[in-house]
Length: 317
Image: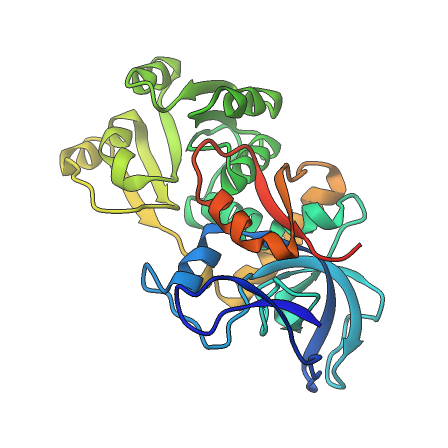
């Protein structure tokens, strides 16, 4: 089979002819139709931000495809079933990937393989941030600070479906138009220093999902309502805050790492996503598509500014 592989952190992402994968008793073999690309994939390949890999390494945690083989101890799945994975044993930037049953989930008929490849990290992160970490409730106001990327759009769709008012920001005109099209109640340009004032004038915010905490966190806190919560989803450095902004509102800041979800949370998240897909509440937006041989370009694109959706790799027809 063909797969992207590296042998050291920082190596070029090379398309390689590899041996076929061997299915152990607890494995599910997926013929990958589409692989998702997320910033964490670039961190693992580079060995940055505390991430590392076992070599040879095939990047990618997310994919959607069809089950082609099942280990003897696997139950609840069938050969030929449409599925997506959130994590894998062998990496998803490949024609085939091995995963365990706790990493594989049924793909709703309402979603394409491209959309399914966006669920494992972006939508699961957004779901956990909103409903597990922040305990989001209907009627609350959510500000998604950096909303035009994969996680941000997922959060916007989920917040609106939950009966929340949703404020959202993006840097590009195209990104802001997308947020309006997706139903945001307020859209602002986070490169405009006055955008904080625009949000403040629109009303106090109960939950902020922050994609770039090192730049924004200190200015986020005055926007909060009493008992407000900030969930830090992304950061690329340090930041200074005034703790009195938290004290004045009985507010709190919390972080999120999807890897910290326990098995019960994982099951809850993906049951919630399946239900949302069946209801038509979520519909992942694809910004850019790449071939497997162009995985390097996909990794560059996912780290770029001005996001307008998810980055995917079309692996097989």
